[in-house]
Image (cartoon, rainbow, N blue to C red; front, top):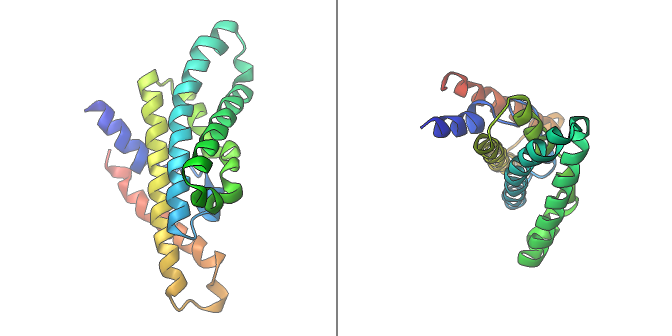
Length: 190
């Protein structure tokens, strides 16, 4: 039960995008259509989950024993970049249309601050291996949930009669702010 609450807390209460403000580039850049948002969410879920576990293993079996914790960020970036390359090759092979739809954003997962921030937060909070994996998975689920909700809202906004001054990015930012306010309601959940 403790792990279920931990996962719910990570997805809803401490959402990586709306509460921690990490991963805003793909949130705003890829979320104009639903299909690329789902694809970005799945790819990011794989990277964040594997990144959380592998970064924990790297931290506890290489960096700390060798006393080179100061190389943490560099080491995490190398591990995350390798995972992104692997996932990029898999997506290119399995779904060429998704690969084209994600475009430049797929290799940019490497520099997504959420993908790097999740393992760093996990180390700072002293998570166990299972907690690090759940934190990565939950953060990625929260990221994917927000991407899908926001993409659906943006698709609906394209059909709405929006004043010219608010069309495009301005209405997207207003919608993102309202979505963040709605998710603040989960703050009292856990």
